Length: 163
Image 1 (cartoon, rainbow, N blue to C red):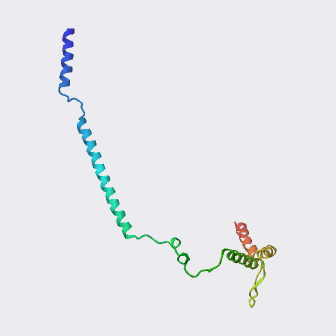
Image 2 (image 1 turned 30 degrees about the horizontal axis):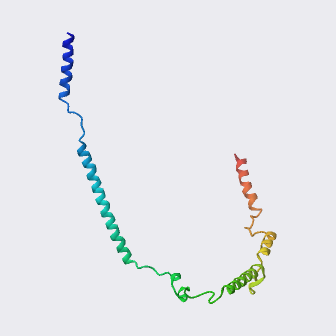
């Protein structure tokens, strides 16, 4: 009996495996697909580089190189267009002109000057203007009259008294 059961188990095991297909992977097909994909990717990248080089050559041909004024060889060509603010001034002269400009600006900021005599408008130094502002205060809106404030305060008092 034990032999019969062992044969039955072997027979049923053998019968169940014959109807099922074995698991296997076709390595040749997988590697063939991978190699084909790599070849297609290389060809596509090559075509893209070729098209890019053609496009760059086309853009370079349509845009001539720029000539910058500071790269020009002659001194006259290197100068900016007119109006030139300090035409023909040497470096020592430009220092002198800059000092004169600063002195003129300081005189305007720190001195008194009429802007409009008819309208009595005067330019005064900044420090003096700040002192006068502190003394006089900034202009503000006019305050409400005292009569308007009590009327507003009396109205709520009357409504409370009626309840």
